[in-house]
Image (cartoon, rainbow, N blue to C red):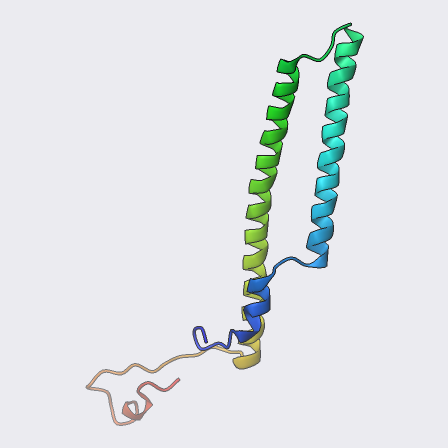
Length: 127
């Protein structure tokens, strides 16, 4: 229980947030990274060919460093995206639980002072 709500139904959510749509998205992203990497490497080789040069070790090292940065940036973005998606799914699940267990409306809890009248005194603490 959390805040009076049954949260036993949220275990599946916390155990695995990866849906089929998430897996398809990740595969598409990896494919696009591969395609971008191949394209950029081809451009590097072609540019050097046109100028009559071969690709140097330094140019390849710089290329790899750039790819490393892209992968790190992607990882950070995906970690953030997953965190945000998980939080949103948790809020949706908790909202469903709230709607299933609570009656819609405005609630007031009567708080009274010791000097309350005989009409208000019995209402103390009533929601």
